[in-house]
Amino acid sequence: MPEDLTTSIDWKPGKPLVFETENYRLRSLTADDATETYIAWWNDAEVQEGLGTAPRNWGRQQAVQHINRFNNRARFHLGIFPKGEDVPIGFFAIFLERYNLARTNVVIGNKDYWGRGVPLEVRGRALEVLFEHFKVAKVYGRLHARNYASIFNYKAQGFTCEAILRQHEVGPDGARRDMLMFGLLREEWAEARAKRAAS
Amino acid sequence: MSRPVPTGDGDARVQAIEIVSGALGVDAAQLPVDTAIGRSERWDSLAHVRIILAIEARLDRQLAPDEVVAIADLTDIERILDGP
Image (cartoon, rainbow over all chains, first blue to last red; front, top):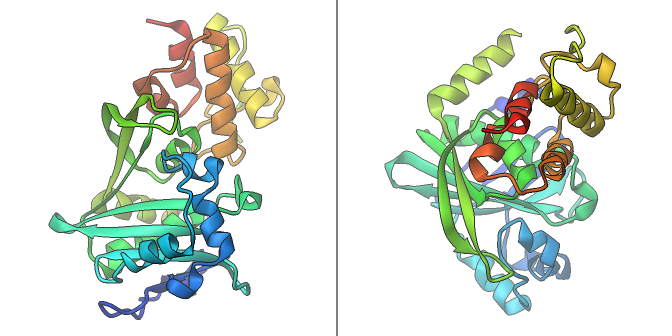
C-alpha cells in the first residue's frame, strides 16, 4: 500500500467518514445514494446470501431509512467507489461498540468485482483507520459458516475464529445454520503489520 | 522458492496435493511444500471455495464448521481427508 494512504483521516463525530485504499474511495453514504443500483443489491438473492438473508424487496423508502440509521458517530455505512467513478460497487459497514470494539461487514454488490480481492483491500485500510484513528482494541465480524470466501478473507488478514455459534440463525431457506465469529486484536494487527514492513 | 511437495507420502497427502493444485491451477509436481493461505498468491478467496468444495466432494459430505475454519495449508487438508 502506498505510504500516503497511511496518513490520518479528517473526521469529526457526525460528519461523513472518508478514506481511500489503493484502488477505492470509501465515503459515508447519504439518502442521495439510495439509487436503483444500491436498492437492487438489497433485492438480489446472491448478494443477500452473503449477509445470510433473503432478498429484502425494498423500494427507495426502505433504502433511505436504512442509510439514515447510520449516524457517522458509532455507525458508518460507507460506499465503496472505484477511484474516479461515482457509482459504488458495494458498501462497508462499521459499528463502534462499547469496550472499544468495532464490528465490520462488507458487501460487494457489483458482481463484476467478485473475486477481485476488494474485501481484503478495503478491510485492510479500514483496520488501519479503526486501530490508529479510532483506537479500538479489537475488530470482529460474524458470518455464516458456509460463506467460504469470507472465511478465507478473515483468515488471510490474520483474524482468529473465536466462536462457532451452532444453529444460531435462520437462513433464507428457513433452515437453522451455524455462524462464525472472527476477531483480530490490536496487538495481532500491529505485529502482522510490523512483519510485513520488515519483509 | 519452496521445494515442490514430495508425492506418494500417502493417499490423503496425494489427494490434498491434487485438490490444491487443481484449485490453484498449478502442476501438482510444482506445488510448493509450504503452500498456504498468505503464502501463495494463487490461493485467493475463489480458490479457497474451490478447495473446500473439492474436499466435500471427495468426502461426500459437508465439512463441519470447525473443519472449515481449520483449513489453511496442505497439512490441514490432509488431516481432514485422513479422517478421525
